[in-house]
Image (cartoon, helix red, strand yellow):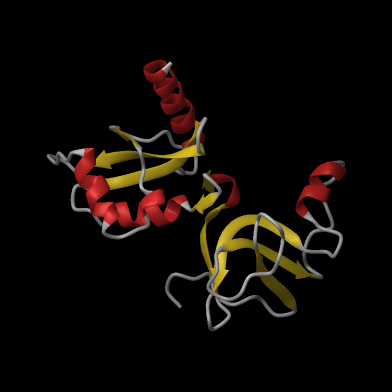
Amino acid sequence: MTGSVGPPIALSEVKVIAPADGRTLVRGEIGEICIRARSVMLGYFGAPEKTRETLDKDGWLHTGDLGLMLGNGYIQVTGRLKEMIIRGGENIYPREVEDVLAEHPAISQAAVFGIPDEKWGEQVAAAVILRANEKVEFSVLQDYLKARIASHKIPKIWRAVESFPLNTSGKIQKFLLQEQIAAEEARLNG
């Protein structure tokens, strides 16, 4: 099935849990993907603390991946737990916002992430790469998002950039964008 990583492999169990309290979620709800099987690792060599963070007492491996179980039992990955933004107690999944931004004709790529905020805990920020010869006001992008996603998910902090910092495998290093924009915001507001 397109958009999923498929069903759980034979002789394994998969569940999706709420990151805040560990309760098992129903199909269609986004949470952390956990796996239990005989083939799952026993732990990290020489790192008992890291093992306890990853494997719970019941043998569930906490993957750190966010996703949901579809109605047919297939798993869809939607992001990484460490990238989840918590703004005023609301969980915001960057990939959801990025996917909507990617549909805008002026946007080539988007990266969404949280920036520390005194009032809200985190504030939603976006860095965008525009397509060649395109210009767009951030207010236009905010209006575009308002018609498509909940208002608390709409970035309040925007930056247009020429490129994203990438690791050797080509993944965006959002933490570098976070650090840079958080420092800029502190200078502007401090």
